[in-house]
Length: 532
Image (cartoon, rainbow, N blue to C red; front, side, top):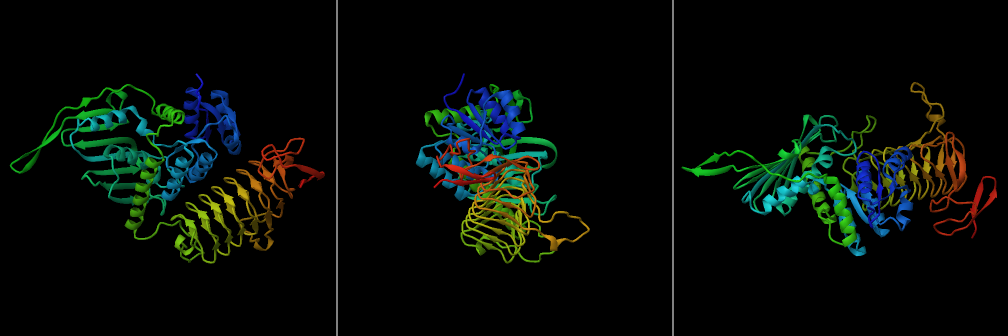
């Protein structure tokens, strides 16, 4: 049966495909948004729905809500735009990478009366819900200690450390069980595969009511373990997600008595707690739909996500202090300069793992995210957003309001004017015939990307060419010649297959923007101008 709340899933990869399946089974799937067309086509063939761009999803009146499963660095931007477009928004954890951004999202959701929900999946697991009921009903007595182990060999990441990748679910459960925020957070970590990325962390929490907790996470563990242990004054309970369903929740009626001034444990056999089986993700998706329909506050709303984010941030700061120095990406051997940090640039956000060389100019409002490196003699304009694992420079000029997505290198000789968009893993070159054993720095050829142009994911821009204003380069295209203004380019080598408007809408035969009504005219075989 079709739902009256229609959802567009943004990001249909490793985890997003599971959201697609569940929203489809609930009759709520309206659209899929992802740059990788083969994946989208395969999911649509299996589950239905329509393929839309993100801009199309925002503008589509049949899309009432967004479910975002994009990289964490994009969560804030995508969620904000979704809320401002009047959509209800579900965001996979974490809500954002900064507490202030999370607070802003909550304020926008309140102001526009939209539901904002965070994907803390285990809070929708029937086993955890039964465990929480045991605690609330007093079956364990006074809550004393909670600890969790989330261990595995992989999935090893390079855009975030183990704390941000594994711990949010456990912190969400612990905060929910105890019902308050910790007044003390301490964390220690092990850095084995990379100097700046923790592979193993243990986080210790102390709460105002006297409760204690710890979270142990690792992706360098010989076997998988996902276990939550809750210790009370009258009994103990274990949620072991690695066990068969009927033994996932065990109640141990252990007690500790004091005899002659000494604590004496009184052990008892465990009791399996029967819980009806259901898929947690389906319950989570249904809850989001129900809240969007009814206006009720989600169980894991934006403020719950912000509380978890706050604890994560405090733990990350504790990790840095434990190491004695700020965690920064490894600098190239040629650079002896110390990394510049955000305090050197008022109004600028620089993630602690980013590296900024001396001699860099950065405009107010710019954000530089995880593991990016800005080399010397680079000029970044105002409100530039630089994603994860980006390298810029040396001697590169970037204008205002430019967005550079993850895994992009902008080499010497490239100029990006205002409003340019560079999609994930797009490629710039600066020499035509590179050889590892032949130095050709004197042969660098300049590349100019003019105002408002967009470059799709995995596209390649061969050096020595100009991309005209508001040109649009399709994902995977290879540009080997100058590109006219407003041209839509696709293929290898790229050829013009149409025209695009200022806002990135494809123009039809009438050359009228379907979104804004702005009118254009061809003034030559490969030239277009706006009719003023």
